[in-house]
Amino acid sequence: MPPTKRAAPRRALMYGPAFVAAIAYVDPGNFATNFAAGSQFGYLLLWVIIAGNLMAVLVQILSAKLGLATKRDLPQMCRRQFPRPVVLGLWAQAELVAIATDLAEVIGGAIALNLLFGLPLPIGGLITGAAAFVLLGLESRGYRRFELAVSGLLMVIILGFVFTTVLAGVNLSGIAGGTVPSFSGSESVLLATGILGATVMPHVIYLHSSLTSAHARDLDQTELSLRRAPLIGSLRRDVLIGLGLAGLANATMLIIAAQLFHPTGQSAETINDVHAGLGEMLGQGAALAFAVALLASGFASSSVGTYAGQVIMSGFLNRSLPLALRRGITLAPAMAILFAGVDPTDALVWSQVVLSFGIPFALVPLILLTRNRKVMGPLTNSHLTTVAASVIAALVIGLNFYLISQILCN
Image (cartoon, rainbow, N blue to C red):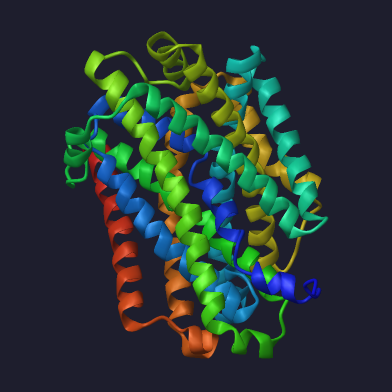
């Protein structure tokens, strides 16, 4: 018997949102920070990628659970649960996070188009913005189309870096040493903060809850109650697979840089340096794979960032803007930087640092809401989960304060 209209959404209910979230974890900012970390410090900061990915798994599970339990997203629940001044403050910083996010993604796409076709960076930025607009158009025809398109671009990124890693080879003892937590001066702390900002992404903490709530609305409350265990199981598998693939991509970036650039001292300070170095050491196939992966990342993550911006404004303020206007607002700062001639790789790295400062403002409300039984019902966090999430928030905040002190002292 063919599946009923209701059966299909139930089988696939929780598969897809985490793959959209995962694209933000391999956005162009990751390319800059991961290659910079690997080229300067070898395998030293590999543990930051691993730790950040484990943190991200827990955070995204909490975000998805909130969407499943409430059929609302995190900004909407903040508006319902917190005082108006708090909500306005959360909205303001979330908009800055959205701008920093789009900065990295548009610049990354522009660099990729320059590497592939020689297009000027401002022209590449406009094309990246337009491509994101087209991808978002799929969402208006159903969230599944958008999720599938973004998932396909995620696989392009992963395949590109797996291919390059096979060509570059790996140092198993170096990888083992890189799993031991350590730093080497304030510059390594800055890069670690950038990696963390590019790994635990505040805008997809908001977005993941929205995507999951859209899936949850396919079922009525009775079905949600009867199928709670399989739904939670599929939700967790979605996050583990999606973010596991993103973590693999991030790790391969650092490993490639540590394997090729660090021992030779060859520059990998910019994306262009990385592209040229890969071509020289591994051949044009590796350089092409890198540029295509960067382009896929820029296109997909820019659409995800704009989608998150819509969720942020609609949820916190109960207002929305036309998609074209929203795209223009977030695109403008990136275009200004491209036209001003600011070094694009520096802009990418610093955008990730800005993102890391936005994590607590998304994570703390998420913890407060998911530990609240009146909000979550049977899906309320266990005490252990709340403690683990609180430790993550404390670590992020502490690392950011340490970074500020290092910058001020220097």
